[in-house]
Image: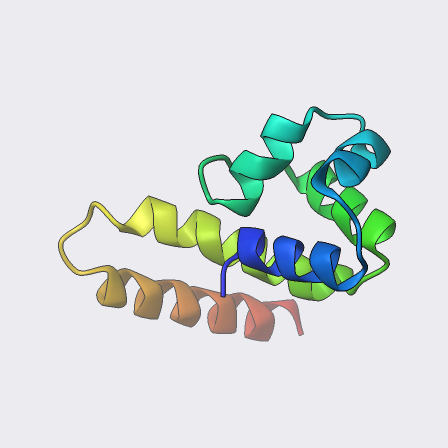
Length: 99
């Protein structure tokens, strides 16, 4: 599931029209449409705003948002799985270093 499809699913489950969500976020309807269809990335602030307006879990939305950004960065390299493994090792290393 992508960030945009999750936003659409939550919005529709709440019976909210795209234009209502756009108004609540103070953006135009085209922006919401592009985000829901994966044609535009939301900003980190917008992720927070989506969670607030849609009354949903920010952490889940943030993970979907970041996952999409990571995918976008990795799609043009030869072996993205290796890069993800290195990133995972870095996260684990940093956590042990912080203790």
